[in-house]
Image 1 (cartoon, rainbow, N blue to C red):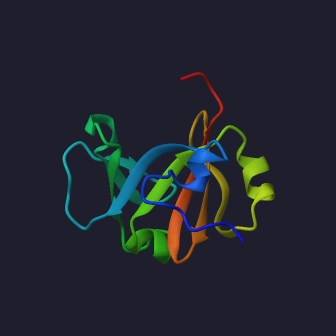
Image 2: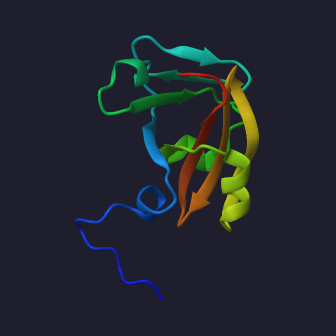
Length: 126
């Protein structure tokens, strides 16, 4: 068994697996400035482009197909180099299958201890 992580230690996903923090997604029911609509998921996203900390707001329509857990609980998002490999490598509970919210981006949501975690792979140059 691994030792409990000390306060000063980075999470294993960053220190050992090589994942990079990308953003914190926070559900809201408030209309936010500069929202961008994602019609395939029926929700609005905002804040990421202007946040120096990677805070992203998400406002969902009532009939959004996005899983309830993602609509209600904030999520952490990590950039990974190979999304398919990471999903195979770890025994995660998959919330959403791999999809592409926009060109050059592939994502999947997993659940860990009741929290949604988004994994993001950029398939085109940044």
